[in-house]
Image (cartoon, rainbow, N blue to C red; front, side, top):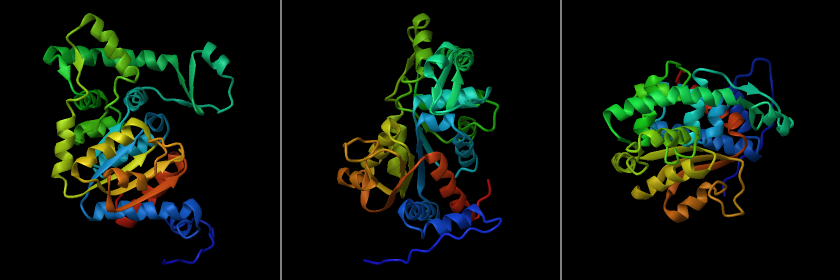
Length: 310
């Protein structure tokens, strides 16, 4: 096997993020895996790959939302696959901010105060009251045109209603980047759709309607690559769709989940090869760590090396 020398990290005044990541890639442990992820993403872009960005809702509640928006704005990515809560958070944060709290706050007191805790992020109930005010008119407008809508088309219409350029839905709708959300009913917007349906029984969100569009993207792509942050339904929808073409050509996973319990969220990239969801000869790597830390480091280095300015 080929081996490389471990090199010490040497910090200096005004060191760039890109240079720091370069040093980390030769430091061992997850620093080296991070460096591998950088190279995989760079190869995706250099070889004109159709790039999937996959993430879970909690990441949109965090500051990663802005990075997702920027990557969508410059068309670094071609497809977004996410969960219903991501749509909730993106829409709400287009109008009102979230606050930083602590992992150790008294959750009983928070509940009494009408504040929901997502890790160390605080979201008050009035944010979800705002969401209701925002999304119900969108549903009503949809009903005037059609009674059945796909999740991706709903995401597009929500994006068009947003004026905040820090929103990934804003840029996805304007740059014609599809946002697939197979579990959209498992969200506050899904709950609002249920409420709307009580007075408008013909209203439907057809979660199967996006499958042909997604399949067409996969089949027509010369190569496909995915940056998958977290696990769950968004992760599986991404790799499962690529099963149709014999698997992804490139894949990076960023996760904090473990693989020894057989969970999909903890499964490493290598396991997907056995299912044909990642190709046997694909370039792939799993990086363990908080995506709020890991993903910006990867992208800072990638964008610097490729000369892409956000």
